[in-house]
Amino acid sequence: MDKDNATSHIQTLVLGSGCFWGAEKGYEQLEGVLDAESGYADGRGFKATYKEIIKRKRRFDDDNYAEVVKVTYNANMLNTRALLEHFFEKHDPTQENRQGNDIGTQYRSIILYNTPEQLSVINEAKTEFQNLLSKAGYGEIKTQVKPLEQFYRAEEYHQNYIAKNPNGYCPDHSTGVTFKQTKPNKVDNSSLLVGKQVVIIDSRNYCPYCEKLKSTVLNDYQGTIPLTYRYSDQLDGLVVRSATWATPTILFFENGKEVAGFQGYMTREDFYQALGAFKLGDSEAYEVAFQKGTDRPFCKEYDLFKKTGEGVFIDKLSGAPLFETSKRFNSGTGWLSFTRPVKDSVTYHDDSSFGMQRIEIRSKSSGIHLGHVFKGEGPRGQDRYCINATVLEFKEKA
Image (cartoon, rainbow, N blue to C red; front, side):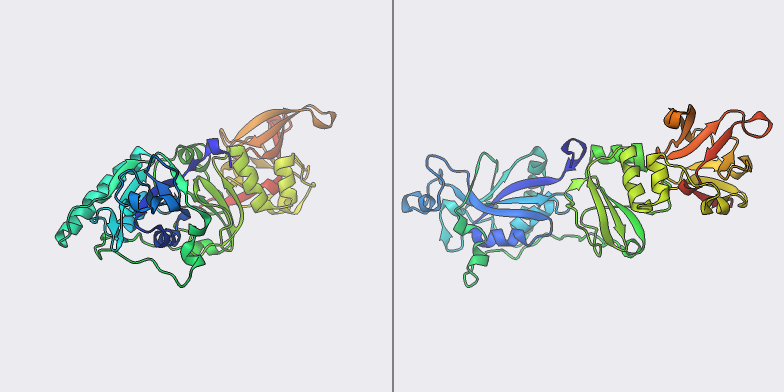
């Protein structure tokens, strides 16, 4: 992935809610959590090891380290608010320096944040949960909120402790008070399970690369392969191989299974080349479009397109209108011929290949090679646009 052209939604929070064994397992089970590590934070004056923090002399030491879990999560799938709701609901934040029978400063309730945006969400969630706790008869929340200074990973035997010790346990000290969450409506992906589909993983928050991709590439896309926007938690039913934590991510599906995926902003040229490989495969049309090939004269597409009804020939990839049938004429050459293109639909380029001096025509929307223009070779001295039929599709006039 080009990190300069994609918005990463990977964030971390360090959360302490008592014994870190059960907490770690709880976070790992949340969809959108990429990793959860047990460790120590918010202490000073000695080396952060389990042997040190559990010493009797440190039991009520304010400089003792807290047992915490560093949670790495895809904020575009599991937002910070949802993670914090899990944190508050799964322990008793009104207990100070303890959780049940686990007593001492190492068990304190604490949130260590990394960004001002996280702090804003923390304060909002804490205030709301305090109101809910007060209504339920609980006291004041004792959770400390601080910026993260340093996280120390706990010893290996503490990592995934519950999985390593299936007969062990970590007590549940939750209050039973919960946020009233409104779960997002599930998106119907049934239409994405049939045929070829392009899916763009978008961001719920501002993503400059998403907006750039839309404004410079996707907003004028009119191709026949459907293009759909989804968030990373709206991919139910689809078989996805690519990571979904960065936006934008462009995914190509066939019958619900990912064929190819690309993270980050793509230029118009790169997007249409990827789309061309997906739609056209190893075909004559792909060779013509991207390797400046030429149709065989009187090819089957020419035979189909030489006598259509009224309509317009469109770019096979972008769907942009290129040539109207009213400007078509029979040149007898075996290639589709037109006197002029749709206004502002093509670009012109010098072509000195094969020892000839010609003017190449490309689609302005996708950049694919279309053919050449020959000055004065059309009816009544007009120009002749000699165009490859394999890179076109026909759209009949309504």
